[in-house]
Amino acid sequence: SAFTVLPAARDGEALLSVRREGGPSAEGLPAEAVLEYEVELRELREVQVLCDGLLLQKTLVRAPKGPGSWELPGERAEVRCSWRGEVEATGFVFRGEAPFRYSRADASLLRVWRELKMKRGEVAELKVAPELAYGPGGEPELGVPPDASLLLRVAMGDWNDVEDVSPSRDGSALKVVESRGEGWQRPMQRYVCTLSLEVEVRACAESAPEKVAPEAEVTMALGGGSVEAPLEEVSRLAGLGAWGVGAALDVLLPTMQRRERAVLRCSQALVGGPHERVDVRATLSSWVRVEPVPHTAEAVVRTVLVEAEQEHERPNEDARCEITFAVRAAGSGALLEEATE
View 1 (tube, rainbow, N blue to C red):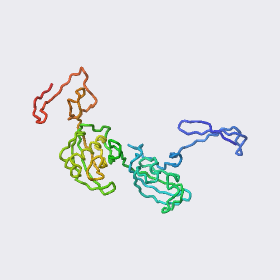
View 2: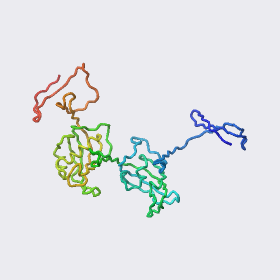
View 3: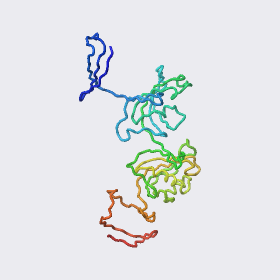
């Protein structure tokens, strides 16, 4: 006999109603009887079909909830995970559970590593078609035959996102976030930034890094075209002239949050010098806002010495304001006038 599932609901419970079709059953149920089943959902495992069915990703352990729990690694992210692999047809384990680090931008890796979509802390089982794995050649050294589908168990750890922040998006400046900062604000042109700075140079992209100076605290104005003595010294030690490191920071700092720690991987095209790659690592401590006063055609520039508690409040046209001001001579700093009105 056939059955028809009828929609039903009951507060606080899951209820499935089924109507029999046909004659009486061997169990003595009459024709057209309606049966009710109480169903308890004990586990839900998400299955994603990716790459037009070439990759099935079944979640075994969900990502823990918390800040950033929804995030996925970017196209250039450097990923840390562990995985185990077996040949689906035979169950042969060609790789035991072991840590794995890779870059999603590395075209030499199996395509599956660029296509999976996993969150931090998630564990998943992957059914991988040969097109995303070792293909028609297999991998004899591992015992993987030609055109073999694989079953992988992957535990996603963490990753560092890598973003191309170069002005021309040509890969000459790649930002790697090592530690996230606070808030949504970013420093803008003219802002005076305080940061700790390290610089490493590499003769070639894959060679060991050489630190050119100990970590130093420096201050610079974004887009100012000039630097203070400590930053100029670090830049010269790196063989980049007076402004090479400053040029890198002009690219990096506008993308950073307060207290963020990040590395900018710079090519010769960005900073010049004799090195194929220069790594500029910065922790942005704070900044002072320096900005043109509206409606002055940038003839008047203000520096915010103390941030207001209510940042977005402004006096209206009829407000009565009390202000304290001082006028000093540019350059010498001599006090010309001081008053409270």
